[in-house]
Image 1 (tube, rainbow, N blue to C red):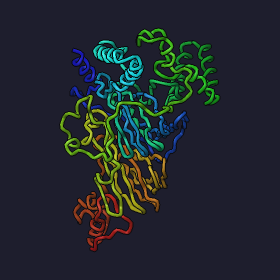
Image 2 (image 1 turned 30 degrees about the horizontal axis):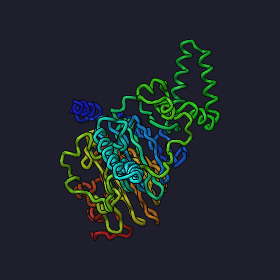
Image 3 (image 1 turned 135 degrees about the vertical axis):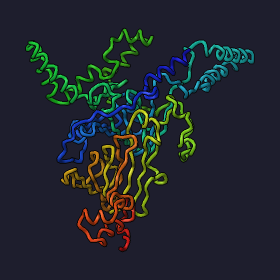
Image 4 (image 1 turned 45 degrees about the vertical axis):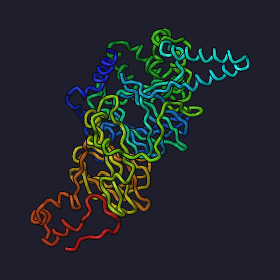
Length: 523
């Protein structure tokens, strides 16, 4: 009965499995005459890391209907558990860590009853009993058997831990976090862990508005999206109150908002005094009754005096049930192609590595490579999340041939190096022609043509796409639109001789990436 209830709960949460029509995207107006390479507009420093937020109200990100965040987590740092009103696609830029995804109704399949702890207590007792004689030792062994027999009946004697699956992630991994799903990240490596995240607020699974909202389950952190959203809501509320004739109350609220906006330090102190996680708004006594614990524990749960921020330090490292880590994570061909089991709700695959050059979809010797993850690789992208990504690397002065995204916006994050990127809109106007550098974000709208040329330092990036099976069309090379045209069409359209048309069509033999000084065909 309990198992049936859990499965029903899971199906209700992940309704895409019930044959519901695939969610569509809420389209936003994209009247763009100029694109901008963005840097973080807000930085939040915590005890064990930094959260950097890109302005989701910018014209570019609003056109794509996404938000973008970068987390830098120090060793032994824990990004506190939270959930958001959007599907997330995360890319692990640097380092390695552990990520927990909490899906309501799924079993706690990672279990450890830690018999060794009980054994240590019993061994201490046995050492004392040995001093009293052999007879006392036998009594201790009998007591041990009695405790083990009562272990399943008395929960208060439970000494171990059990929890849902924790995933071991590393540089190059893409991780899917479905909407409303609780998750946390812990840095168990020896260097900083850098993670970038795209939040798609336009998916129909988000029944709120397109404003990103993060709901923290612990601590008293500043909410990276809270400030702008709450100010806008407050202004709308004041206008409504003024229309209703509550002018005095509206003036008081305006005064309060003005005092709150005098400085971020004052706002931080106020949030730390009131609490900023989901539990802090509930009555402590009622929560204590709900959890069946003491009120003092609930005070800690509400975190009203917690000043550590959203990334906290875990002294001594995270103690969790984990399988042994393989030295080299190789993809099982059967697992990669899908055997049905991993497509169930509780065991669905949420991770794919696109950082390994050996798994490249496109490769040009001396030029670079490109690796994608789409709905064909991860069923959850196809059925629910409807996002995809690819990781690209261009060697020194290599070129990404002119192309455009057929069915998606592209959000490019620069991992390392620099490149000159040109973007052209439908009327032939150049809307971007600048150099992008490490840490910047550039949105390339759907169908806008673009070309990338790496600088001397090379260019490494990850591009998030707003379609689960994003496609591109190239404008030059052996798979391009021009290659598909008859010579007579090319010569007539561009007023070229037959020989010139033949050169335009055939001189570039690469399909997507061209190396510096690569050879040309002779016509």
